[in-house]
Length: 421
Ligand SMILES: *Cc1c(COP(=O)(O)O)cnc(C)c1O
Image (tube, rainbow, N blue to C red; front, top):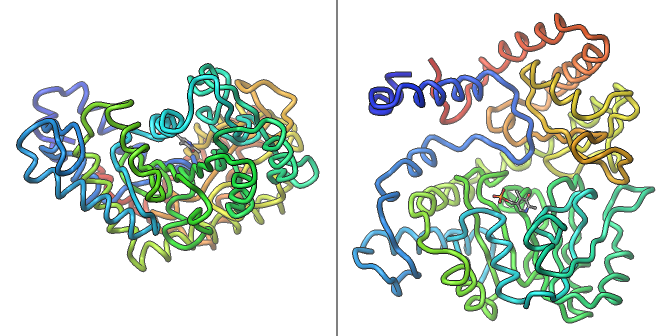
């Protein structure tokens, strides 16, 4: 610990110890929350630089503070790399995270009380897609589409019908628990028919899109929002990419509409992550995420797990545990004790409450970053199956045994950027 963060250990041993414990936890466990990842050592280094000392409200060449000799080229590099990687006309790399990025889109195109159409949270949407407890649901009128009961896939007929009856100014596609490919072209057609702006929120799948493992939202979407820290494997942050005609509106909404000074250390780390994401290695990584998720889905299905939509096209699996006779929360907590970190999640048409839902959501971005091949997915499925059974039987010994097995396997696949004792 001391050798990894010497200044921190000397000045604040209490905090240094907590960080060291987190480093060990991220090394020892099988991290399967689909929105998480391991950034590279280079990305991590960029986030811990003196760029955090600098204020730079405004945009490159048009700042409200002096001393931007290095900041302007850093931000321009990040934006140019984003445009090249995703094929966007314009990129704004300043949003602090995915939620404020989405709020900026509302600010750019809507007045309070205007209507937005997004995917419902319980079906797999995000809070910022107009859900009631979010500012986007309190200040705007929201209509929500879901998935079809028979297929578990987005109900495009419902999307079209709601678009025609509700006449939203903004339509949002994308979400947090969608295991299938999003049909951006179909959303684009519906948005054009009703004269709505289409926002593709690709927070979860940006890395897959960059790596060619999921279709691109361009040219169908007017605006694309994404976090940078999920499959894209950058620092915690976000970007908004737009067609040229919307560039000014989006930039003004982010600053001065919603934010003050950009987080320059994050911008730099985003630039590094985007450079990495443009490589052939990253393309192989993106494909391997999907290969691993499909393999894991098949192994789980073999063991009687009920996969929403029957499987996956991307990096995540949504599992309805009703068939295993255990709710999501106790299963997720038992898996956590076994060193397999997942989250409990609602499943479409869930009869249970969001705080105690029927499912879990698991994903392969992190374990793929550590180099786990598809051939290890049978082992992972077997662990999940054993832990779920052990939890039902109150068998803590098996859970402890799995934890040791997980650590033993993961020791052979060092985590990028994570220093261990
Ligand atoms: C993660 C996510 C967000 C929000 O990102 P934060 O950085 O957590 O604010 C928004 N939309 C979708 C679809 C997401 O998955």
